[in-house]
Length: 66
Image (cartoon, rainbow, N blue to C red; front, side, top):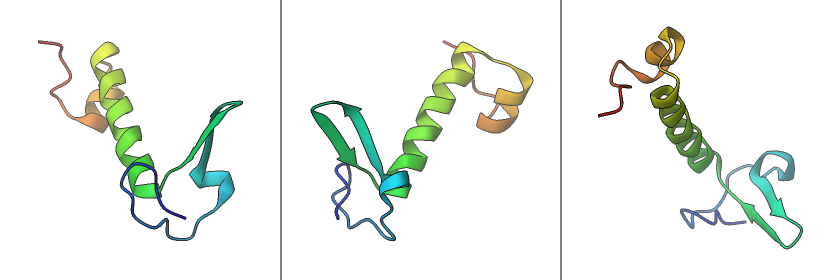
């Protein structure tokens, strides 16, 4: 099974963790590395929207919207 995003083979593929159903007609398989990158990206966006101390500590001090 290959990752839809990076096209690399998914190591230790597990349908519970690596298969994401978007809607009734669309689903994808994503590797753990791409999942981690996506989560970090979403976390940094959340840190910009909600600049709390916990978010700044987790994602860095540069969370202010410029």
